[in-house]
Image: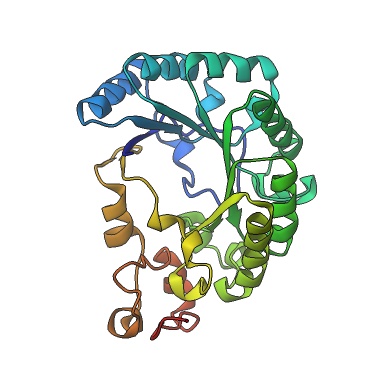
Length: 306
């Protein structure tokens, strides 16, 4: 089911070290309710039946979000997802309001199994307690919950424990997304060393987390990790199944996000193209990673495992 992805604004009550939006909150204007409703109407005219409200933090303007969710439901969207840092969901009354308005999928971000890790990455003391309380509220309201966790040097060894926590919280799905290096990190060698792991060194922890999900029967996926790093876990690569999306970002309108990822966002090394049998289906890593670390880690797949 194709979807519309709307960045409603870039204000946020977290200040995540790794946020791909960088400092957009400092110079990008928030969309008005009327602007968002026009985008929703455009999406329906294109035949879209799913919408993702994201940002920034979409719940930063809680009343506006409620109004837009209600409007999306009224004009025929079947899937209405809120992609959020999850903190506002700690308030049960707000959860109930937004579910009544029409939201039926929730994608809170959890980056550590304990507050000391999650809160360090979000630069927001108390955010771990709020997002986990929010997940419990949504679970009690029988909502579909798919979490996203960014893999960094700070949390990579904690990934198996994080997977255990997500299973205990009874989420419907979890995803481990390898860090997308933003311009602020890329220009600061100290930050690179602090935050960006070697993908190869992170993979044993990621795979251990996926094993926990598989064993528990919880759907689990990865994002921005190429096929060569995912041997025997290829069925868990999210890019295989991510719905096509029309993304309305800050100042740009990306009609087919899959094409943006493949042609601009990600990249492949010379051996990927000339030697790898997965070249036609693999998108490669976000291009900033090999620009900083090179292609040595990425080994072409030359034959299928039996």
